[in-house]
Image (cartoon, rainbow, N blue to C red; front, side):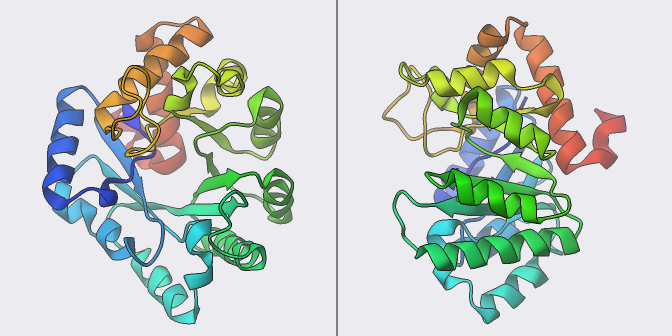
Length: 257
C-alpha cells in the first residue's frame, strides 16, 4: 500500500524511523511527506537521506503559513525542489476556517506556488477548507494542473469538479467517521484511476483509533473502508491506488511496480 499524505516531520527523528519501519512491516511500501512551511521545509527536504527508499517528498507552504512566504523563502523553496525524492509542490492551497494567514496572503501564496509547480513540471498536493469557490477559481486559472486534492470532503459533486480539472482525490481516515457521509460519497464515486489513500498522520486517526496520533501503518484501515464502500476487494483497491500514486508522482517507477 501507499500512504499518499503523512506529516512525518511532525514527529521526532526517533519516532519517524519507528513509524516508517512499522508501516513497511505492515505492507505500506511508500509514503509521501508534504512540508507545511519554514518550520519543516528543510527537515522534509532531507527525509530521503534520513529514512531511505520508499519516501517521497512534497515541498511547499501550507495556507496557514502563507504570510511567511516572502522572497527569501521563495528562493529557498525553489532551490530545495532539487532535493532527492522531491516529486511535488505541497502542501499548498486555501484554508478559511482558521485564517492563520489573511485571505489575500493565502491567495497570493497559492497562485505563486501553482505557477512554481508548472514551471518545475511537478504535480501539487492541495489543501482546502471552507474555501471551495476561490480554490476552484484559482485552479481553473492554470492551463493545466496535475496533483491531488488531499483529505477530500466535498462529496460526490466535488469529485466531479476535481476530476474534471485533471486532479486526483485523496481519501483519509475521515471515511471511517460516523458522520462523514460526504467523504464516503466521494470514495464511492471517484473514478478508480483517480483515487488515492492517505492518513494525514498525525491527524485524523481512523476508527477504532480516533483520538490517538495517527500512524502511516493505519492507511490499511482507510483502505478497508474504502474497499467496502466501493464493493471491491482490499487487494484490488491496493493495486489500483498504488498504481495511481506512481502514475501521478513517479511514473518512471511504474514499470517496476
